[in-house]
Image 1 (cartoon, rainbow, N blue to C red):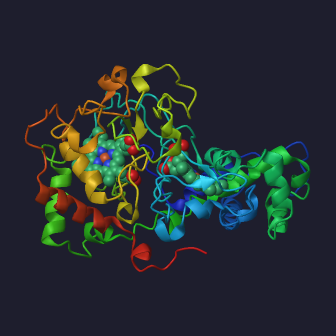
Image 2 (image 1 turned 135 degrees about the horizontal axis):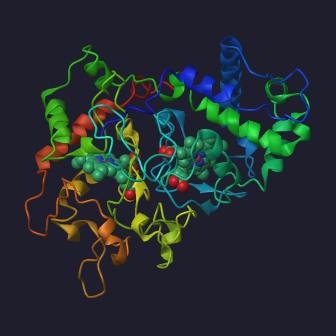
Image 3 (image 1 turned 45 degrees about the horizontal axis):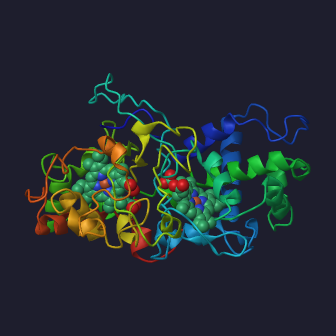
Length: 424
Ligand code: HEC
Ligand code: HEC
């Protein structure tokens, strides 16, 4: 499916449209500090101010209960705002000893993510608008937050992330920060007297920063240069791209969109769909020591509004593959540690399940060992999976897997390749 509807315009336009419709933080006391309806120029200025403020907050460890963890501790700008470490999950909490339950995603290229919807109808002209593409969009691996400003409250309050007791704790840290004056300038002199408003404002600033093009969607990869006719790919990279797109081979591009959209927007390498592919259970996640704990994505337990919706169990959001070569853990549970394994899994999940899944005491393979059998009907069966059975020929051979891995290396942004940090 191709994107169209929510494909965004320029960064600032997105940020501007966001702030223009946001009510002033303390509407109860219109005092002239807060803008009413803003002119375009005012809206731009405000977006710029919030971006600068959000950036400072993003790197500020004082906004955590430990005093040692910033957003950037997990979302490292040198790693496309993904984790620097190879650990599948990160530690958080007041003493930084509480393990998380999911891999840290990159925060790049989320600007085009649509709000979560259960029924996504493609409006791009090449798509059939009557086709329901199912659950799509939102932020986090299960799409449970619609926008950056909703999402930002999750890590600030999560007991295994920044672990603030409540929004008031965040507000009190902000009040003491070096940028408290800027915060007041943007949200009103008395903003700190209204902790709820200040917490909303903090989340808004973080969400606005995440819309900044230079930091979050530079489109500076070699593949972007190639699409613009300004660079060449090697023969192997070209083969990998063809396999990635070939519907009877990798078919990767059916979910990880790889071509510019009809109106020339660069590809996001995701369609933001939520899909079940049954990656192996990761025994090294502490929560998984309890056999009763199963991360089922869209149907819970982290997400709570679709509990009991069995047709949603096992579905996770398709991540962008831009900058994927920088990652050291792959998929929602970080179960693989090489990009090659992540790609090879698609080829032989069903033809050689014994290679991927754990075993029962009697030595038999526990196929799909992180997805209870009742939910197997939810599994995606498109190529490269395609109903294959043990012993069948995989959709991709070893050389073809290598080609795709090489192609994925072209998706790394230029600032990441040189090792120069884009921010901070
Ligand atoms: C302890 C590590 C950690 C810290 C600190 C942290 N995050 Fe995250 N972040 C994660 C993990 C893990 C996820 C995936 C969560 C999930 O799927 O439930 C995530 C997801 C996200 C997402 C959604 C990404 C996507 O692909 O949909 C955004 C946006 C985000 N974080 C922003 C922030 C901001 C802003 C902060 C600081 C206020 C922050 N994070 C602090 C670990 C962290
Ligand atoms: C039917 C949709 C679909 C197809 C086809 C598909 N993917 Fe994915 N991809 C996903 C989803 C969904 C996830 C996340 C699943 C999870 O974590 O449980 C994912 C995750 C990944 C990841 C891990 C990224 C990260 O940040 O951890 C890689 C790498 C990847 N896919 C590569 C590929 C390649 C290569 C192909 C083709 C051989 C492919 N995908 C085909 C939907 C798809």
